[in-house]
Image (cartoon, rainbow, N blue to C red):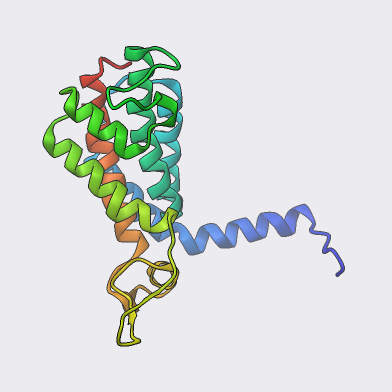
Length: 199
């Protein structure tokens, strides 16, 4: 297979054409984000801040699955960072798991049980984990019912693919799921960071 040698002006032209095609979507996504995002600064650990910025950049760029994953990582690292400070590096949660071995679910439950997050916040984070993020990061085979018909209501590799490439076929799409995730991030993360005193 012969490797194509691209000239700089050809690469620039590809970028300009891509920018032109994607402009309207990026404009609408940024407009939507700015309309709900609190512009006041808030304090979070450095890694959380990086994940937060990457999640917003993924949303703006139209990388919807990446947006969902980065939103979850932002919240998980905020909780994990809090417990590294509260329990010490290498410490254990009350459930007995080491902080760095605890799942996102464990961290949510611990934060709720400790009174660091409200019941509503815990529900929102569990919904993000279970119904938005998990189907993309824990992709499953198609389950076949006892009558031999595929159960397409359960998340599987095919429905996840259709959410990205053919959302009209499954009446659900990655973009709307990413929108829900990014809205949760920009509204809840600043609020949660104030619970933790910015730690």
